[in-house]
Image: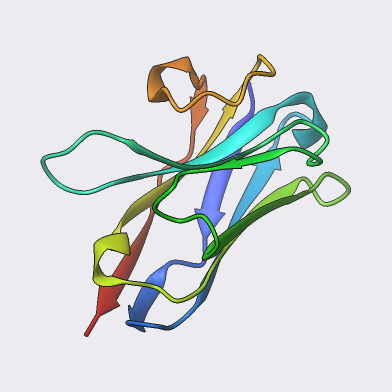
Length: 124
């Protein structure tokens, strides 16, 4: 079974940048479509961005489009989320996910594998 481990979260001021990483182990990352979701207390998982198996196709939530960039380096079995111009509402736990299918769905229930999450806190 594939294992996902996120890193790169932390505390940043509004307007700042962070890069999250997700390392894939036990299976090659090229076998999976992958995505980032985020969650705040009391709410469900919110779709952020997704990447196809090859990494050539991407999809973004409207709330992050133009500020966040998802990428995938299958040679390193690693996915990234470059976040710029961060806002207070970006504060959340960010999760790396993967799925066996190819559809880049925004439905968290369709994603089969999840990392443990990394906290991103944006302060004013």
